[in-house]
Image (tube, rainbow, N blue to C red):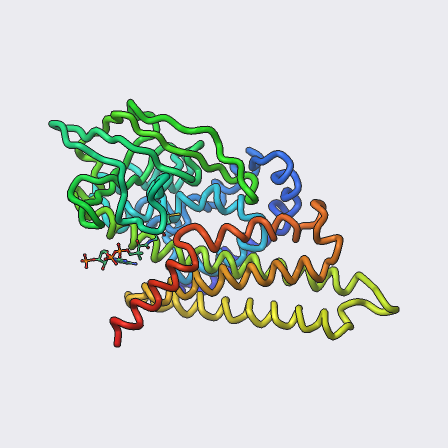
Length: 380
Ligand code: COS
């Protein structure tokens, strides 16, 4: 749903300009320094990017899903690290509070997240708990007016800079029904961070372990105030997150197509630009077609989400198709660049490494396949 076409066009144009003029020129620096420059962080905050999808009454831009998708398509045209820095504030780090939080939790945390004063993060994965998210092993023991948490959370995006974690821990019996979602402030006693992970790509994005050793938090830190709802909160958060990631993948594919076309026009072999060779054209055509298909499916699913439809299957399908698709597009972009695509100076080299993550996080491709098939079978 687009509430005001003119306003959205203005926002999309602003983001496009910001991406072209500020973010794309800084990609090499981010790659080399493994950090986002402070000046860019400040500009992102001023543009409202930290609170894109946080409701207006809590200081955010309150974008609908369709509007958020239109912005994500633009943001996807540059290094994933830029989105990642505010991605958890809009997505998995704040959505738990938005969908299931109490009024007190919303009014305390959301305005701070929307301004970027507070960084939110989402802690579900553990050393032994990945795809089987309902088997969370971190425990939360009620003691008077507190909970005492014990366990380790792994590969937690933005953990090194986070101020608060939406964290899933077990308060009840085995399986999804025993999981509760908590808001755990970074400086809670007993909470420490592991050393930053060294990753294949997405340099500038920070992840590490979150270690809880008799970590004490107040009893009112339970999201929504009810135990046993944490798995469902996490799943609702991921439905939206998967759609956002899918749109971002389409943006990445769009940029890869632009780079491939530019190179194919400039590079001549056998006496003519390689863009005029049919085998190169076939690769360009496949990438352009798949990117367009991804764009259509994310916009359609976002519209249905905004209309209140159940989009579990469609969000999984978007994440599955678009994350696999951008992998193929990146591979072709490197192929079109030839040797130049394997050299670190080329943008397609780091995009090739960066996009590999999209098939893994917020549910692997295999998990999306399971979700899609289960929904198809139960829908009959
Ligand atoms: N949206 C809303 N509710 C959902 C849901 C979704 N996408 N998926 C499950 N639920 C609900 C179910 O309806 C069920 O509710 P009831 O108990 O009222 O029937 C409950 O949650 C338990 O669901 P289910 O029985 O399907 O749980 P499973 O243990 O079988 O797990 C999968 C389901 C595999 C889909 C889930 O564990 C998953 O998504 N795993 C991937 C985790 C992931 O993405 N990790 C990445 C970490 S974040 S970077």
